[in-house]
Amino acid sequence: MQIYRNHHHAQFLSPDKDNKSDFIDSTWGVDLQQSFKLSEKNNLITGISYYKTEVNNDVMFDGKKEIDNQAIFLEDRWKFADSWQLNTGLRFDHHSTYGSELTPRISLNKKLNEDTNVYLSWGKVFKAPTVQDLYWKQNMPYEYNGVWYDSWTLGNPDLKPEKGNVWTLGTNTKISEKTNFTASVFYSDIKDAIVWKGNSNGAYQAFNVAKEKRRGMELSINHYFNDNLSGYLSYTYAKSERNDGYGYVNYDNIKPNIYRAGIKYKNEKLILNIDLNVVNGQVLMYTNGYDSYGYADKSYFTLDLGAQYKINNDAKVFIKGYNLTNARYQEYGGKYSNGEAKYPMPSRSFIVGMEYNF
Image 1 (cartoon, helix red, strand yellow):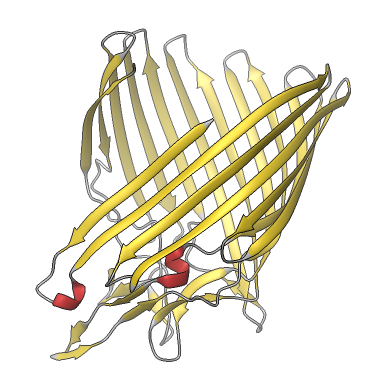
Image 2 (image 1 turned 60 degrees about the vertical axis):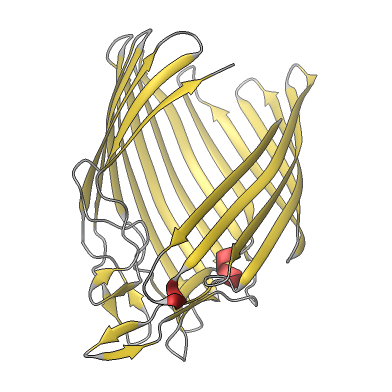
């Protein structure tokens, strides 16, 4: 059982009264899950989930807005033969705005030997719009050649939820006693995918596009050098195309190539880790008159460091450093002004803290 509440309160200060904002964004929810052993070869997992998200902001959301979702799910894991396992699942959601939806999923796993397995999975997709997608309402005036212009960012209360299918084919293998390798390819087709783009009045707004299909692959390798030291390497490739009634075209606001590497040292008291992230192949920013696409840079490199020390069984202290290379990068492309990214990620930053369990 898990009961949680995430609360974010921020104040945006500006000499322009229209941009001053006291912003509250909170979500609370509960998750319950229980496993039942039906037989030596059959396990059943069932659970319920509920969350409620609320935003309250006169400038960005025109007041108070909220959504909630209730769900119940079942998953059966059946080893119907010595080397075969079939997982079947069913989830029922009831959304406060979009009503009820039933989403099944199936996966088949084949154990080739003691070290290797392959699997094939399929599932239905249901993703409701967020509060931001539905209700965002903000004006950010800007100056160009001495003239001030309105620049609206608008949600769309008429949005439909995203629906579709996703397929995955993958394998896990143990190369040696200290090395594991995983690989997978995936394909999805989505109807009514949600995108943000310019409308006929020049505002940046959320819309449904007719169709979206995405494909890609993931490769990763983990190696244990000894009992204390381990490392990993991974590569992710993704390609996305969208069809808004005029044929499929490449969607340029994705990261096509992501490389990750890391080293971790651990003993009874101390944990040290280094994580590297490299992204390349991003499309540079451009505009077609209404919409802006791409990123500020084709590639970037970030370095994160972390250290954790265990004082005793109940207390530990830690320090984490993020983006130590001070790279200029974005998680989301496509929105910029005067050639600069509108939503850049933070520069070099550090978090120091302590955790105590009781």
